[in-house]
Length: 381
Image (cartoon, rainbow, N blue to C red; front, side, top):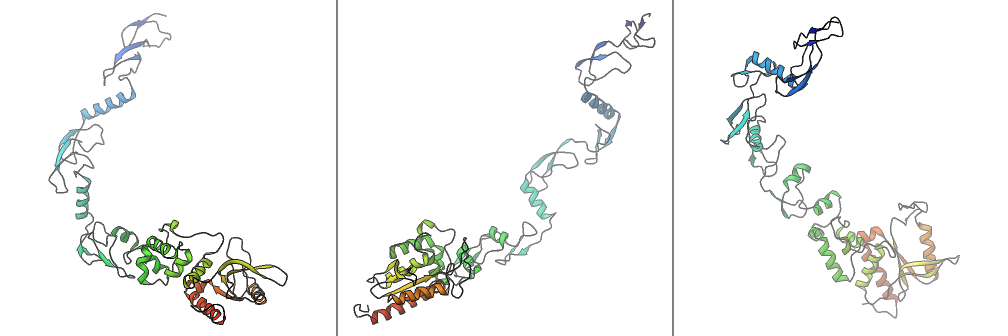
């Protein structure tokens, strides 16, 4: 086949087909956008750029050279990079719209920067967009401009009197905003009211400083206060914020109620010998029975009955303890009392609610004074 001249580069070549017009050789060329060298095939549609990105940029530049538009923002004419461009994107220096007097560097675009700092923007939004009007503070009644539409309390210091103990305190505004609290001076007063306890308002200060009270209790009684001591004195339990190392919390051995009654006995009658958890009794079947607190000299004993494991009027009531066994009911208490009568010991029952309401002291005094009066060997103190 005869040689012919390439229709693109003009060099001669031998065609492989009778209708081939181009030599299809690799030729060196320069990108028309970035001027970088690259190789292209000598053909019908020769490449003008080295990559697709340069190709798209070249197309946009050619379109911009052929088209101008009026900027929607500033109104000046500009060369478009793409046909959809309506802002010129020129760098401008404008006054901050927050009214601070500073200059802001921005661009002429759809969302230009108009404020020098976020605080200026916030002040501007409060004054214009939110359109917030002044209102009265619900705590102090003073007129103020709120920071948001939901603000009901101003940022001033608010002094209130506690609704329970009367102590003056500064209201925590953040807590008031979140929980609408500000009536009570501390968690102690708030807990005492929300739990509906019978705490004496005069003891609120001591309860608030429960750790100091526990130290004073230890110095005065020679032992740490138990949860029963706290419950009987304040009417509520040990708060979670207390230092639990200052309290006697031990579920092994003698119960907290027994410890409390034993302390009452030793404080009031220090010369009496009180034995704990002794077993001088025998049932009709020969089983050994225990007395919680026993005073051998007066031949009397005290059974401390907590409501979790003892029942006043039922032998079939389940205990709320994890093992859910039956409570010790009337038949158990009667059998122990009969065993005590056979041993010549007068047995008294003191229940949990008597201890917590302060009735245990009167029951102890009545039993012991009667026993002392009937005894020939022991004189009444």
